[in-house]
Length: 616
Ligand code: GLU
Image (cartoon, rainbow, N blue to C red; front, side):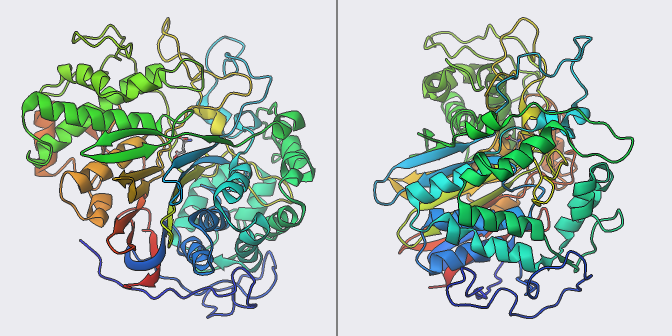
């Protein structure tokens, strides 16, 4: 399956504006429908989506060739991994506006070659100061309809993405936002060619977008998704980026852009006859926002150090518990994960993720007192492994455990909790630079298309991240750490991950996919580390996402011989709600300061892996 395609980076020279012209200077292949007029010719050089590229000088992998190329350009010009990650993410805000952008939030994990430290930036959205625990209950005390809340002002949290970029550039970068936003601004102004992914995501949202005239005006053409190959421009977003470049992030958090987003979320502009729930955000909420520098969480796995995002994401902790459980199963059975059959591997994997999710759902949220160290401990996983049976799947839902430091007995006093609702979209990118700094960055506006609300005249969609709170406690009578609260950050599943070996970078990986993010990251890690798969094949492999309910499997796994064997062990395999689970990307660090950048070959119309100097 390993792709051998090689592609010499086109080099959007001048993307940073240093040497002049370029964006738009190359072959204009897309049909310009003449609408949404922008400046200059469109950025339509067809950059191929290459899933694997090896070489030196730095690497980027993301879902989008323009974003990867912008990152590569920054690296080539001497920018750090953080600089390139910010510029690439800003580009994703233009080309992947339904998954990323300054209307949303995310988590940035960084390895510093200089200090050898992994640090993280928590850029998660926050709830308004007025939010209460029963925020999502109707007057009858019943939870509000989920879809109704999604497309409303009520789901909108204070966006953290721009603050994340600022902290990343200041802490880990050498360039400033003024330069780093420039390529994205140009792409927004000049336009880019609509691809299948953009078209499909717009089409899926067309009905919803039509209820918000500002969104319909920006993203639809006579009520339909723009055709593949036509030019899409976003002059409003170009202006917004330009304003931020010149006035700084205060214009967003304390100024004109903040006011516009607060107004629109409190009273969304809707089509005639359409009413949506108003939001409660205030300019004080927006002004109080901070992207927070935090330590990562980590675990050791097969002698490697796996670093991930801590609270308020459940990603790093739950990936870590999964890996600890897999090591515990090895001990328990006397057989290593690398030695068992494919169906036994997936059986163990499913049992581990389901168990880790039982604990995640009970214990993890943006509250004081989460037993993070216990959840990460091998002793806790060893206790939790006692329920594992190599010959049969445990009954779902598996009860949660007690991470209380007392692990003498097997057993669990916890309730069997159903799995809470989760989102389905997002985007991830990895960057490595020539000095050995690394970034794994996952960002989102929650659902594909977020709340569906575009900030008028500003060209970006607002998130619906607050729907990641549980509307009601998952189990009556059991404390739920993920209920809404004032200023609180909803629990996430995003799992940007950096793996070190002896303190040196070994791998960076991440993916979109709501709660499936956790299982996908864990499966790619075990596929590459334990199952001897090339990294691109570990990314491409059919996925199994077992989150303590029915087990979602993609790419024909259910119908395969392995799928039948899993069903024979008692696993309930079902197709995922979308055609595939996640569109992941990764970077592997090779000897001699070389990189293998890796993207999807199988899902979501692929991804884009690039290095600065191919095969050097
Ligand atoms: N809101 C989700 C989370 O933070 C990510 C969105 C998604 O991938 O669906 O876990």
